[in-house]
Image (tube, rainbow, N blue to C red; front, side, top):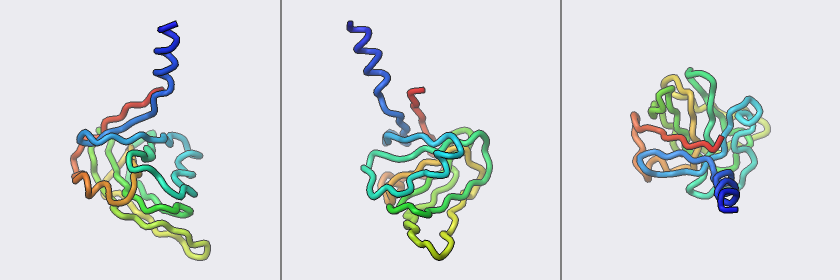
Length: 137
């Protein structure tokens, strides 16, 4: 019975990432559909929550905020999980008539973390910081 409880508890653990000891529970977007949807239509997000985009390769990336209702910080990490670019305080784009701007990485990225706007500055995330990923799968 104890083993069953332990196994079920392990299965319910959320996916998490951390940077410099600051942890975020994340939703993982690791396929084309989930990456395309991203954080669209969310009206709010707790401070310790984000979305981790995982790509099969490392290359320059650009994100846009179409139908994203909350401002975000977009953190780009290379294949070694080192922070290579930050787009801070990116505003929502609710426009249906004009194209939303792109927010590109400065260097090739394989992992992208979206968190609430202002947190990268609050926690003093800097280029070269390491992303630690703890996924349940």
